[in-house]
Image 1: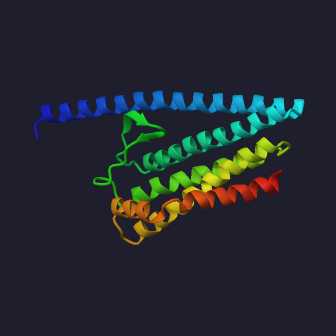
Image 2: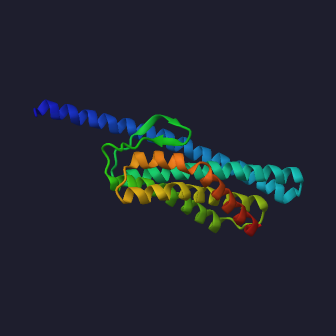
Image 3: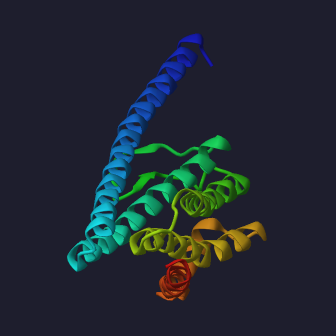
Length: 207
């Protein structure tokens, strides 16, 4: 391989990394702003409900808790996957145009099984860390505070119901892509129902 070829490859790699970092900063800023805005709106609604005692205010606070819980848990989940991928140096370029909260692509054909497992486990771990953080930070003094915790708990359970069997199958040698497709076909709405039931129990216990 000639020296000029090596220099061209090095320059191309540098450009790819620069584009990836620029996209990551853009998405990170967008996600951070989304989380801060969502929590601020929910916090204002929660305060309004607790201070006024109005049924309207309580209803708005509860609806905000649901939406904010979904938003924050979804973002945490994707950043957990991304962190697991990058910690293990997986080929995982940030998307130019993210789809919803999906922010990167994981290259099954070039990454190892161990890298796939690290990426997969990062999502559920991030969800449970979020649940733990909210449990420690929120006093559970209002219905909407309890519902915010319950919503993130429900999503963490739902994520585990779907992803843990995939992780287990891949650990025992199955193909990652084929395993995910099979899991999508066989589970239906089971993970959602499981998460909803678990979240409802947590909310009832917390209020």
